[in-house]
Length: 252
Image 1: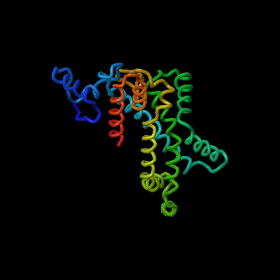
Image 2 (image 1 turned 30 degrees about the vertical axis):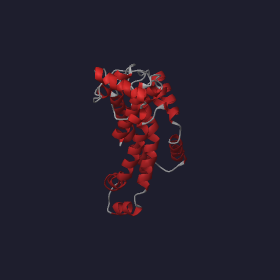
Image 3 (image 1 turned 135 degrees about the vertical axis):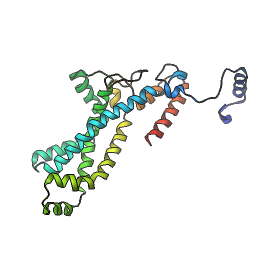
Image 4 (image 1 turned 60 degrees about the vertical axis):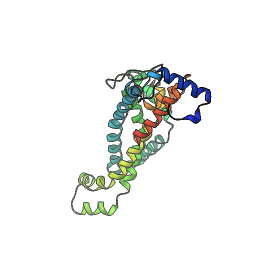
């Protein structure tokens, strides 16, 4: 029915033609795929719940990591004294930026769920876990962007009598903002595709309902794809392929 005749043998084509004549199958736009949540039956499964969960998780991640990361980088680069303590902090941040993502999942499990008793599989825990993973990378990218500003621009601003805050607000940040935004967008794009840390905190569970708040359990795009690939029914393979194509198109 999809004109993929090279994938069917003669017996299968005859069976499809017979089912079409009986009215038992039809070719139409798959609306439930976009309007339903996850389901154990392939024909009723959809992407709505995990799509909403992904948006909420990334919203929490962005709200937490971006302001804190940029503010930390500005303080370390422009205000903090250059001593052994600040050098130690910068080394720790650089090391955290290269740690495996699954370790941040273990950290989120131990801190947010076991220590603070936050609801497991919730949007809040997922967003905070991804924020912890994204924060060091955003700091490193922002520091590199601030260092790229021409020193002569800073000296000229100070020579005109501008304060340090005025120089940062009026000279440094506008010039460094394109690089800061580029690094932030790439970091969040990496975070949206992470599966391992979210699996550790329970976001791989079967959750068919759409989350109404950041405290409700939810799933995300990457975890949903992993779950469907592990299903024994072969009909989920088409769902997974469509899901991957839709996710890649939406991210692009």
